[in-house]
Amino acid sequence: MSVPASLKVFDRSVKLAQRSRAARSPNASDYFYLRKEIADRLTERLLDITKPLPRILDVGCGAGAFVAQALNKYQPGPSQRPHCEKLLCTDASNEVVRRAQRELEAAVSQAVAEADAQAATEGASNTRPLTTSFETQFEVLDEGSATFADRLLQVTSDAPFDAVLSCMNLHWVNDLGSAFNQLGRLLKPDGVFLGAMLGGETLRELRVSMQLAEEEVWSGVSPHVSPMVQVQDVAPLLSNHAGLTMCTVDTDVIEVTFQDFGALMRHLQGMGENNCALGRRTHFGRRAFKRAEEIYKERFGSSDEGYITASFMVVYMIGWKPHELQPKPARRGSQQFSLRDLSELSERVPGGFPHQ
Image (cartoon, rainbow, N blue to C red; front, top):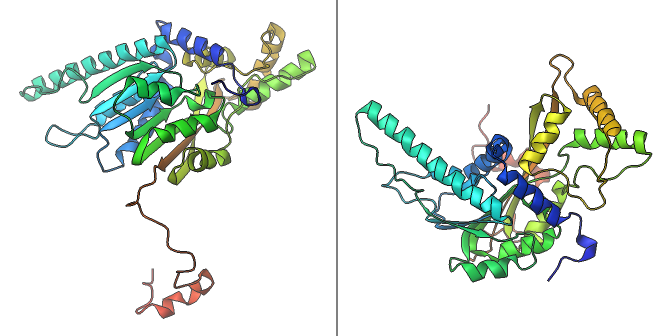
């Protein structure tokens, strides 16, 4: 099965090449900071869930295995039941998966060394294991494929999962409806989906600057920043396509400062977040780039420090697979009071409301 032409916005082969090239770079870890920060915030939301989630799927794990690192960092002590017993990490790029495995091994080794040093200082022995506190499995699978769920079921017997996570990869998927439908299929009843993706006004400054420069130099515009999902479109994806309930969507804007326009472009390339929209202009030209840099500085630069700022809007989402024991909304019309009577409610309730 393939994505219908009407739904194709991105060139997935270009995006795969971009992310693979970024993962192969010896300086790849220099550009992990944004994705790592978002993975930490997403994992903290996961750990707010008090019930254990033995089997977790991380869709689009990224070159740093960021969710795995965060989960390992926040696992409870040996006397407590762990949040996670097995984590399955997938990514569309073989180079990304290999890099993720190396980064996770290095992070565990560093954690053990730090625990050894702390134990030596305190005169105790280090009991931290030389591996993650949960089993990990890595698979090369394309989350943008219409057969992602079917292929995943062929390589694991752990499905359906207690939790499915997706951090910073769904904004490059062409058919989001199909992707969310497949993620919903992979959840067990009362399982939870948590996701984070770029959307809304992400890189608004760059979009405006390049469009104005292109219009001046080339007398026309083409997409130079990939189109982003709008916040109001996310809830229907969770409820209608994934079949989830008790859905919540919220946003966070992260502003990152860069020394100059060139540094911003290098960092986007290093993150694997550069443009892959269909119909983009492949040759922008030195003159147009120079003009875009001038516009960026004029409109969005700091006059005092000389740096520029780029905004990343992160859309966080959570939803639950329906289950008979989940809380249900009250029957329509079963309320005892009307909001119109709110001002009189204190007189109806014995003792009224306490005064502030």
